[in-house]
Image 1 (cartoon, rainbow, N blue to C red):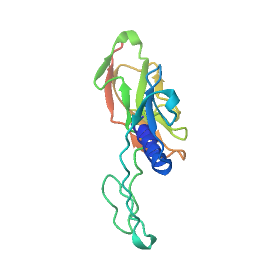
Image 2 (image 1 turned 30 degrees about the vertical axis):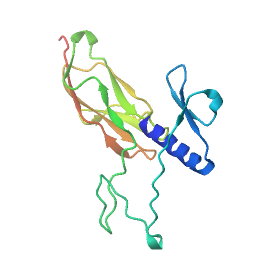
Image 3 (image 1 turned 90 degrees about the horizontal axis):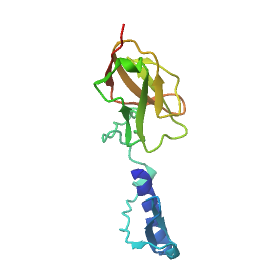
Image 4 (image 1 turned 180 degrees about the horizontal axis):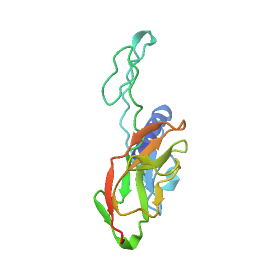
Length: 179
């Protein structure tokens, strides 16, 4: 969500510079912030700071891409692509959770993914390092009939080609079941 607002503001700043148009900020009935150039919708004028423009490198040579803040050395392949999400983690269950016997080993696993999962991305769930379900475009998984014992859950983010691009931090839980 934060990246989307930054992109909107950047686009608005460029439009303002190009068209010298006043931008207005208003909030709708649901609390969503709206930026518009229509003064009829109400709202307050927004003062946008000027953009800093950095000229390209002479001769058309671009600087090597930076991965994790470190520029790769010439001749070396770049590292793993950037993480396109601000948040990618297992929201529920929490690390160290005990699943009571009354759940009969059934567990819903919820992921926190922000911004929303892109249409060309999918996720899959690992249980003790093994894939539990095929990749899906979802933020929730259901595990059924888990035996008593300790489990480690981890989510994997897959790109459009099915390549793993990111893994969540592992979450440990313990299932209590009557014999």
